[in-house]
Length: 148
Ligand code: HEM
Image (cartoon, rainbow, N blue to C red):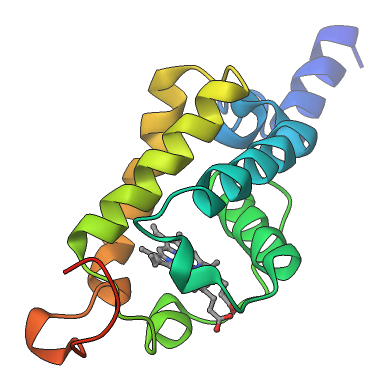
């Protein structure tokens, strides 16, 4: 068996023959994504548009679950162990502006970790379809808490 054959077979086995690096790898892998999550929570906690919704939650757990979710979505080696977006946000009175605020905070965190903007956009594009499960229609929102 020639060396070329072995190399080709190995590449095919690992899927590397046609697949480039995953989005997770392009971002910088686990250490980078965890650093982004740390920065995200810091930015989000200082953001009066949304921080009150996180006032009584376990942020370490939240950070871990968000890490798992983004890791999994970007083809990283992770399973998401949290609840569905619909279930976990059912009691949160969020609106479109709050959803956008959270996305903005995520962009800031990615910037702080020098993740290229085009990769940030790819992540946010994966999260955008979740908006319909997270944000309630206006008619179902309770009239409590800023902002309207
Ligand atoms: C794309 C946007 C979002 C993503 C990907 C996301 C992701 C997550 C994840 C993975 C969890 C943990 C689920 C679990 O506990 O099992 C969670 C919980 C939570 N999210 Fe979001 N979220 C988003 C938008 C929002 C928005 C807009 C708000 C409010 C401003 C929000 C507030 C919360 C809160 C307060 C919790 C904790 C719920 C609890 O522990 O009971 N999230 N989110």
